[in-house]
Image 1: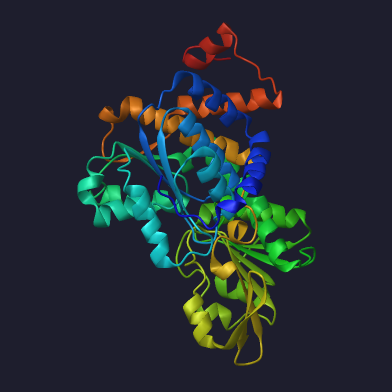
Image 2: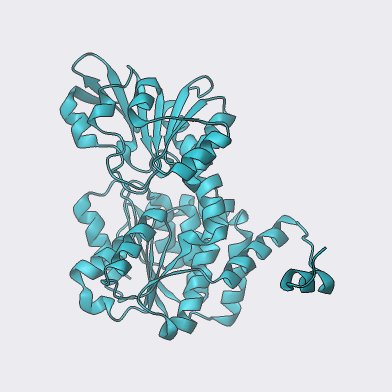
Length: 418
């Protein structure tokens, strides 16, 4: 078996951490038990480019239990947990190509190693597998049944490809499943982003002015959790409806330049490029802290910040100080990469349980239905979404009600008024 991980000697520690995460993933566990019995994925080749974490490990084990042949690489150079990668190789015989801190060349060589298994289903977090197939391996892309995409940034890229007519195979937008983006994006990102910031800096958030860029599901989670810790939260948005929603939920909404003058801690969660740039760096106060929780490290214009600085130095693990020419200091966390994964452990297992349950069931769905799919981006079928929600509620011991026949008839009628 081919693989490339940091050190197999780390495997025992990784196995313990994988087991710890599995405790909080009851939905995926139920799916795994069914998969192990029915083998619905027998012979399916799955290539995955995801954050190599304890939760991802449980997804890979579930797919293998269903009979799939799986290979995994990292979707971010700083998100790999090396002990987890080692355990997947040693204890589960799953090929993993991921090393924390790998350079750009190694990162893309690992993507190529996963694609070498000629996957029938791709599983992306940021669309790098799909992008590589479309740019370098078009003949291979034509033979892929379908893909699954985990994050907002990837879905944006893929919809653009579909709109331009260049998408070579169908993709299921796992990110858009309600059991994913309503929970993973909001509650997972909200908690794990602040976890990464606090681990990196050990600053007190209470009383600080925290500026959150973007008020989508991720931004809402970050803003609400920061407020819960006592921060004064400012939201920066370009969408008038989202900005209005933030105002109605009690947040201050401001323009970029005004916010740059006020903020102590800046957090980007937009999925767009150069959200924080030169005109903002010039306005920031001494000691400003910059963090990103969007997928790629492009939201903060780091090259411009570097050019504007007199010097830069590492002052803590995951904290770099930029000394500006006027004496101000600006601090960048985790090289502008996903701070929740680069400086912490990512989302809690209980929320990834639903996200990765979607991934597992989507692979099963693709095997059964790929002949009927066109080269566009699909949402997760509502039946799968609802089944995951039902399983999650059962695991939590929560009972819900059901409609009576009279109520069902009333909701479907047009002639039953007052």
